[in-house]
Image 1: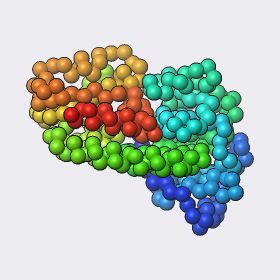
Image 2 (image 1 turned 90 degrees about the vertical axis):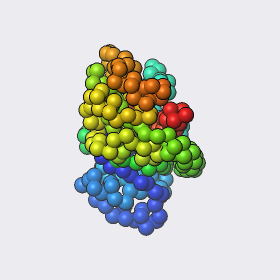
Image 3 (image 1 turned 60 degrees about the vertical axis):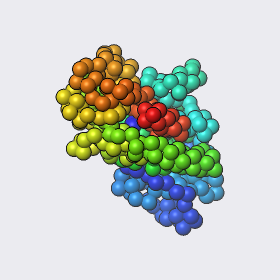
Image 4 (image 1 turned 90 degrees about the horizontal axis):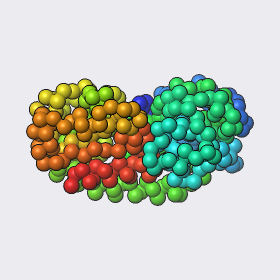
Length: 334
């Protein structure tokens, strides 16, 4: 899932004491909207006691790069992260710009002429962003390095996720954005629903044998194990990993078809990166259609599940997208 993650943010609505604590932090004016973000904010601060609070109409949230205060619920939001876009849309937020080129199918409504194309997820067009006169910019792992620059345009929050616990990241993001949009109650109800879904699928995963997560790109194959960006299949959903020596690397561990064959997975879950980013090339199904992969228990028993690459590689953790991803896995465990 998407991410390139750096920090998990277990967000909770703060008490008055927490509000006072936040007010005590140094702050600098952050441009449009008269809002402020904390000076000297750091990743380590964000990973600590993240919080969201509302006082006197103003909304303060902690995120991966500090704290940001909004004077009111934002009405013109630029979103540079698809998981956040999915959540903001589901909660009724008003989006004025987002990168259009690689929008997942579930978010194609944002290809409309009423939405400004904000460039790409990694290289947003800041002049276009500025022209929309946003009162909030939401960024994620791919655009996190632009936090300071974007904060000069409008109040900015960084929803970069830690990536090692997809469900916790989901809850954190939904809680934060629910607070920002004044939809905390709706956010809480969605979070409650995800726990029962995960428990149901985990019961199936624990009895589904072993599994291996693969991603194809340019004809090459990499694998992802527990604790990785796609590791929720093992970590949250209980599927036993085939190999215990896979590095928890954000880009995966390059492997050969011989590795896949010798791992003997009962289930294969596959992400096609080329397809996800709109790049031409052999499909994942064509890449893996060879005697070595077909000889695995997963190949012989037709237990290879091709996941929605855009959801898994580009989005993930969104309010509606994560449940859709879980459903894909549940189907693959059948």
